Every structure is written in structure tokens, then in C-alpha cells.
Image (cartoon, rainbow, N blue to C red; front, side, top):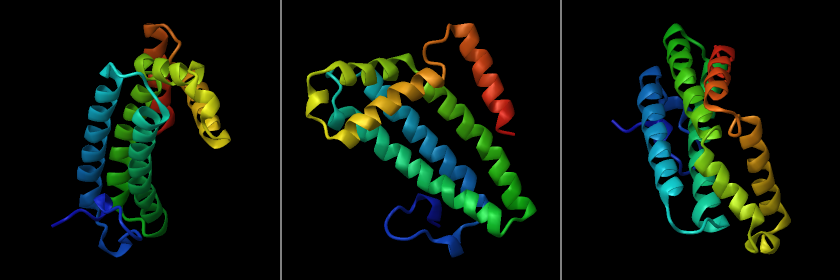
Length: 161
């Protein structure tokens, strides 16, 4: 059986989504995201809008689309099983996004795009996205010392519950 939370063409398949789809979809998308982060963070190629930012944005859109369907279902057809799946996977997503927002390698690559000659040739919207990413890394704790990053992550996880 295919997982409707991993279907990205067309409209969401709300009528097919079951609580047992949530965990496998979240796990698959987080694993895909972690692999992408590692690939991009270790790339020797100079980061650009197209070889770096777009790839991260595309994955973020997929994960966001899938999770928003879960959130919607949890709000409108809540059940004990769906609520449990939602809560269990919210912690996984919080952990993933905390790690992402504190990844110094990604932060450095966004700052490199911002400081590059390419930046002036980006559209105002693209520039805004890059500027917002740099801001969000700062707010997410990317510049904190390791022990403060760990505490920041603990607080973020506690607040997500």
C-alpha cells in the first residue's frame, strides 16, 4: 500500500490518510532531509541559489506539505490513534528542525550566498529568502556555543509538547 502522505502530485488524498501512515512518512522525509543536508553541507561546490537554496527549499516544502496534512487531519477528524501519531511525530520533527537550524555548515553556506556576487543578481524575492534564512539560523541558535545549543534544543523540544 502506498503512503498518501508521500503523494505530492495534485491535491492531498485526505480520504486515504490513516494514523499508521504518519510515522513512516515522517521517518522517510526526515531521513531524506538528513541525507540532503549532509550532501549539501559537505559539497565542495560553491553554494548558489540553484545548487543549494532551491534543493533545501524543495525538501522543506515536501516535509511541510506532508505534515500540514497530518495537522489538518488531527484538527478536523481527531481520534486517539491520530492524536498519538501526531504527538509522537511532532517530537521527531522538532528534533530535525532544531538540528537543521543549528547546523553551522548550512548557515555558513547561506552566508556565503549572501556575500557572493551572485546575490546582487538574484530577484528581490530570492534575496529576501536568503536574508530570512540567515536570520533564522541566528534565531535558531547556529551561533551559540555547543552547550547553549543543547539547552536551546531541550527548550524547543519541551515547548513542542
